Image (cartoon, rainbow, N blue to C red; front, side, top):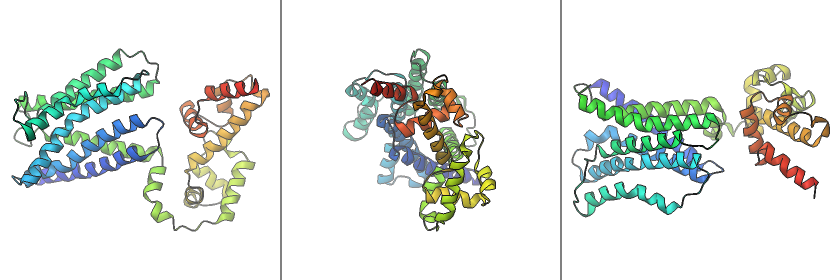
Length: 346
């Protein structure tokens, strides 16, 4: 029993993490709003169900909580369609009429009609229908990925493949464990998907924090906003980076900047984060992008490829270069050069 309580606590912390991640996705700026709403809403629904599940046994027959339990359970019928449509939009360049997507809402509407309007016959019980839905849409997504001819980067296609496999594998595992009678005496098989989803939320949160300290900066902003910035030190730091072109070192780090400036790593981080409202990586890559743009206009660099110019400007990774270039100019390098050439010929 104590082990079960620990598991429920683990799930609740995961649900909190999932809610935070879903809010970050839903409210952050994104070039494709449809994508962020599809993925963010799927995570939000999962998080809400995850948050409620540990209290299922406690609420008992209280009418209000009984309905909350059923609503959050049936809302899982939306996870499959949302993730499938997310993958579909990512892969397909053609615009499918949005009203056709309404067909994916038929199962959840049918079950709500059975629950609140009229007891129409249902093919599966409330607990099993979200699992079957997940398996069905997981297979659809896998088929779509296999036959997709869209030339999106492999890294993105890999992440879509992971989503499809999880969408199929998790409910399939629950059904297998349930019918095989495995772990029957230890805890209910329905707890398995919630534990797996919790682990995924922990991994997503950890990955988000590892990829950029901007995540922590935003969370701690009310605390660090009271930090008094020494403008003289900040100006000296920026002058050092600019005049000595430290950003040309493709392995330049916060630690190296700390050593060159004579300031502690903590102080350098605070000066950049609070004084400029940027992360260290954003600051350094902005200098690199400005140099790339300068070289694009200089005919003496015409013999170099786009990636060659990026490497000369301090970028080590093609992916990082493309990410910051798009962020800074709202164009890919090829689009930017094409636009510049068209202006020259006007």
